[in-house]
Length: 241
Image (cartoon, rainbow, N blue to C red; front, side):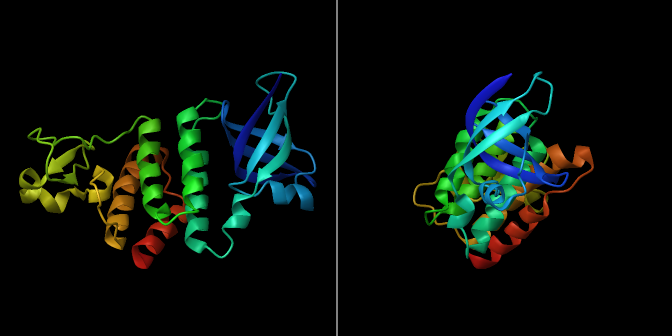
């Protein structure tokens, strides 16, 4: 068995004295792990940093085997983010979330494209808002998408400012006001409001919203918590923006 694909490094773990087991998010083959001989060498460690884009060839005698990777570096994301702690946290958080929630060897081209777009956003001003959007799309990709198109109770499409923690559906201001202490806030920028300014509170509300459903739908059933990098990212963005 053999295939060649492009992908992003999600994780690299030492295996034995010199090798590494590397997990990639690939364009056509989904999240896929393989053994890299010499993965702990200086040259290979540089190529196998989380977020780096690589070209990979995977080979195995049988499809169900772990297999071996031959990997070549295309571009170093990590090198571009040195001195950018917020962006480094976002990269770590996104990579750890994909590693934790996406089944291995399940093709996910939409997620690959959104992950690539997220990394591309680090060159711009609005990367933090893009990260929140990315988590929203991640929930959709894994089958837990939120319905923010209309009010769950009345069906209206205007003045949607809350989200029901039970249904994951939007709630209008009028319908939700009596229950606002039990509802999650829907920041304007997640509704696609034209010209909406994104404040630190908006980012905090957005991450609280997506984090709530990631924890409830994905991590809690597995008796786990959100990755520590995700928790620290939420704290940092709420303070610095």
